[in-house]
Image (cartoon, rainbow, N blue to C red; front, side, top):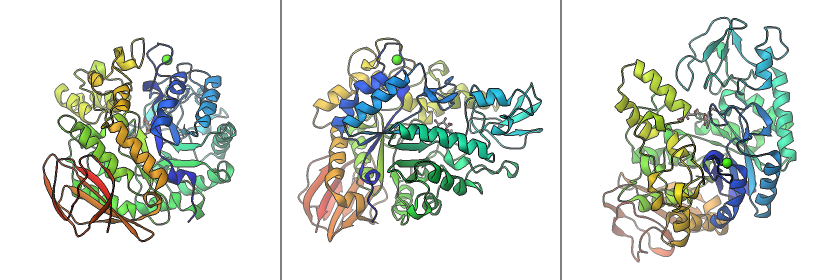
Length: 531
Ligand code: TEU
Ligand code: CA
């Protein structure tokens, strides 16, 4: 097997706006990140996925880029970026940049030019039609916006300030590859590719995800940029099945290292098109989905519960009240002992929770705000809308990191751009580091285990039969067996097995001497080497 650094590492995602504010303006920044690198080194991660820090009018908090080769003033300067790279490398941490090339900002020079006239040389960098078709924006409403000046409509699959680039134009490819090589030359560790499954779209067929030319483009990108470098590349692919994931990540296809698949998210609570409607968490379905993905043969998995678009795992599937610590650790143990590269989203290692939004004024996110306008028109009540935002709104993940018990959780000395969760007195990094029983120390232990145990990286995966709410699996490697058992429930659940525990790997409870016939406590999770 072809062993790569990115198969052995654990990646930590930073949402810069909300991580650490060094200059007191209430917005997280690059110097803030640099000041917390020691914290990340202590946690043990090997790479940071940095959400966008490029120049941007911040309509979608940086996912609307107006200059790919400049740093947003809010976040710092290119000198700060170079310093971050150097300081991270000094601690053996790679920096993986966010590559957002399905669309730009409407303030990007290419779009400013493109909308000047129908025959502007940049017109073809974007997608124009005389009449809209039925395509919908992922952020509500039509995906077409009339450009008054030239009388045509441009496509925007996200906000109207995020016009889609025209990937049918080879000049766009070259611009993107040049920009990628600029960052590669700076020494970055790779790219996380935003909604990359949309770039091969067939607009007139109203086909957006997994379009006909997608893999041709990615292969070309690989050859023109990172292909001969040892970089981590991960595509955000909402529509990927294991078959599709192999197209992206089978090494001989020369595309990406891995993709983020979302089946475990969409099938259980965030069904496409109806994200805002309540769906129940089904553990049997979760088991089925993971067992299927763990069987991926020709590619490589990424493993995650959270990112900046998703609700906090302890709140959506765990129990963020009575069993917050136990359930946060249970999800960590369940995921980090599977096969694939784990990603931790900032604050997940503290067991941070969703935010108790009371009014729409507290909400910043463009997706949530657009949804509200649309749903009010459709007759939903303000209460129903806020319920949905509290459950799955993106700002739940975006409230500032909780560092300590000082005002605003030590995130800023100013006024934070988004309110800090009031529970920071109990949930914060400083307390967590010093408490051996904290969620943080379970994450730290899991990351450390991965560094020293190849079975976690390469072992085979086998799902075991168990009670509905119990997730139990076996990893097998070089003649040894490792049993992982997690009770994903507030209830006690039975567990029966023929295995004898030989050596404890990790647990969120007391080490058991015997496991052949036991009652699992609520959210109990453990792993043993077994015979
Ligand atoms: O997300 C893609 C995407 O489809 C999400 O917007 C998703 O549908 C939604 O957030 C689920 O709640 C990526 C980025 O991760 C996201 O932050 C950006 O807003 C989006 O692309 C546009 O760049
Ligand atoms: Ca700042």
